[in-house]
Length: 366
Image 1 (cartoon, rainbow, N blue to C red):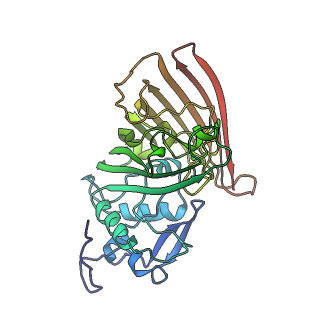
Image 2: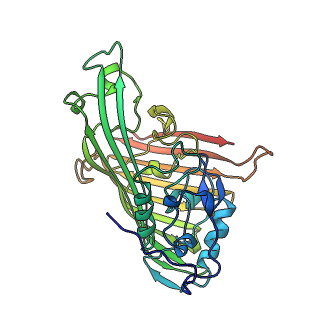
Image 3: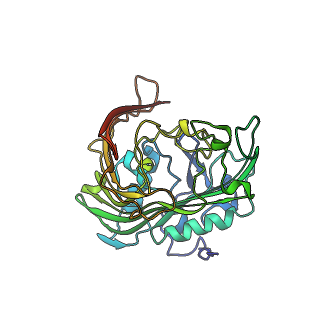
């Protein structure tokens, strides 16, 4: 267990005068709330005043970074050295790319039913301590139980434990108007059945459903690695490249209201497009460019035929590939309705036969 840094007293001269007296916390839609420090439970605050200065809220995929967080990040970068290894301050990125490529270092969110869960202070302490060395992560764990009627096959009651760890480890940051920064980007998942029947059965198979009623459940028990890649930004965060094993669904077709089975819709049909090819576990390249605050584009390409839990070298074939292109318009206020994102998604794909083409649309509007 990671133990956080020792408390820094108010009289400690090492604490800068510009340390804020509030925390930035995200709501369920990705909007940032300025929360006075005294209204945040003691166990969920950074363990030192210096840690409060570098506190960043958890990001919400599919939305732009809010002005409040942009202003704080700019203040955090003031006076930093031109080059730093394992930087505690997130590297500079454009507003939409930041929400896709960063994770923040705060576990708490406003409006929880229980103010402080027993393990939360330890969890927050770990996130703060690791972020001081450039490592920011999101860890989600789920226990599920399914009771089904009129099953076509197998048992009518199934149980499952599921873990999803997404991490970004900033290795270096070369700051400046044309600066560059590099990360290690990874996603590690684990699944374990709670009963003997769960090892070979699933809700989808047992009821004969076209979609998966538990969209975050995998066909593979044990560990699997959908993503392990090097990520690098250029031109002060306007351009980002990922290369390695990539889960394209982490970046393309990301809708703020329907993108995860944990906390949003559960059925796989409402998590990601079932038309757009969004491979994981295979070799890939993802190019991201945001020239202005309101416009961005992403191009993702993957090749191979590995399944969950397999090395990308398994069943590798150049006859299995996909190419997805997303063009997005992300205004802060669309026709006085509020923020929205409008995405056009042409794609090409081949799975051993002929090349197929198509186009997807993904719209979200507050």
